[in-house]
Each structure stands twice: as structure tokens, then as C-alpha cells.
Image (cartoon, rainbow, N blue to C red):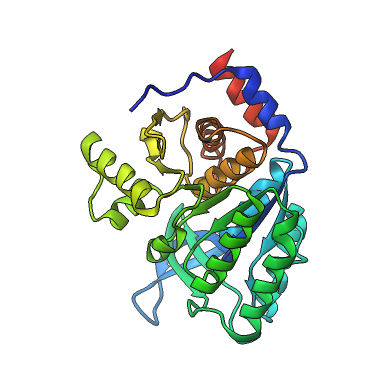
Length: 334
């Protein structure tokens, strides 16, 4: 292992400036997170369950859609490939994409499955229940053909491939093999926010960004200390022959394991933590666009660490702008 590289402000600011206009193909599971907010002051006479008086509702993009929204906020141009149902919730999701400036020309409709939609009922800041509309069955038939066709059309025009795997059925082995082979043929970086069940499909990618629980599960070893972290991080990188593995560790920062043998630990930059929802989406988004803009792996992860520090200071899934990222960098490196 060698010492982590030093980081200088000017080169990092130049990389952030190159985010603008970078085209990144985002492949993955689409979903809309819907929230009902209210108060609970009584129990139902019909059953022993709380009655929530709803006061407001809100929604936000989840899954690969939130990744695409993060890329738009960073100044990049995501080409989003995923599957929607042909139902009323699909239009809600399309409206949310339009509100965030996400282009939806490469989405595929599948009338045989519902649009993934999750409703959370929250009272006095406590989640009472969650209701999910979804199918986790693998796509096939016309939907599979449509996704493969969109990948064939879009990847040759892109500077990077980002795979956002939430295990909802879009990322079949055929889809992953097709996307990864097209990206390799073009020589563009492949960034993956993985699902444990698909882990061996990601052999030879550029970078994976699991959290330490996911990484530990895959490697059959819980991360509890520095020794177990090293075993899990290096083991994952070697198992997949990836260029590197970035293990995110919440308040303990991030750890980057590169094929070259270099290990880099990045302490967290967050001073206040209000909500970690969507932080993983922000991390993989920044890593992907930074690599597409010519960053080294440590530089890309350093930028992602700062972006994560921005978004966890806000409630709900949030995004980080180039200006916020530059401000965070300047505060740390000036």
C-alpha cells in the first residue's frame, strides 16, 4: 500500500468545470418516493392501528431517477435508460423527471408491470408504514428488447456508463452484459452502485461504490474494524477484478481500494448530518461524471465525498450543484 495522494484545489476545480455537458448513460431501476406527512393522536376504532391526519404530501425521485437528477444538478447530461409501467403512476414519475430537467427519451414502457412507487406515511417525524407498488421480476420480451435497443443507441454517444442497481428487475444478466460490453468497446468508465445479488455480473468494471454493510455481506465478513475493512475492500476489488472498489462508511468516510495496490482513506467532510437518504446516489453520480471528465479515481472519490457532505445536510433526497461543490472544496483546501 502507498500513501494516499495529496489533493490540490485548482486541479479539482478544473475537473468540476469539465462536468458541464458530459454525457453519462444511467441504467437502472426507476421509482418515485411518495410521502404523506401528518399527525397521529388516536387509534382507529376499526383495528389497533394509528390514524394519521394527513397535512401535506410530497414526492421525490428515487433509484436511477435520483441519480439522473444528481447528474443534471452537476451540469452533466444523463441519458436515462429504464422501465416504466403504463399506469397513472408512470405519469407522476414522468412529471417529476420534467421538473428536474431529466430527459426521458430513452425510457421503455412495459404494460405488464407497475411503475415502482413507494408511499411512506409519516407522523411526528416517525414513519408509520410504507406501501410499495412494484414488481421485482426480471424484464423480458418487448421490454427487454427495448432496453437493449436503447443501450445500443445511446452508449456510443456517452462519456461514461453509470449502473444504479436496486434489484427491481431491469438489470438482468443480458442487460448488464450488453451495457458493459458496449461501454468497454467505447473505452468509457463504468461506475456501479451495486446490488448484492448481481455482484458477480460486475466483473471488470471501473469502480463499484457499495456501502460497508453491502460490501461485507457480499464478502461474508462484517466490517467492524480496520482489519475486516481491509479484508472486505481488497477482497471485493480482487473478486471482481475491478479497477477499484469504493466502500462508503457513513460517519467514518470512504475507503478506496485500487487495483494498483494503492489505498486511500477519505474522512467524512460533513459537520452536520440531517438525512443520509440518497447520499449513495450522489456519491456514484459524482464519481461517474468526474471520471468522464478525466479525473483520477482518488480525485473522483474526493469530489464525491465533498458532494455527499453537502446533500446529507438537507432533508430528503437532495442534489449538489457545482457551486456548492466548489465552495466545499475551497473550505477544505484553501
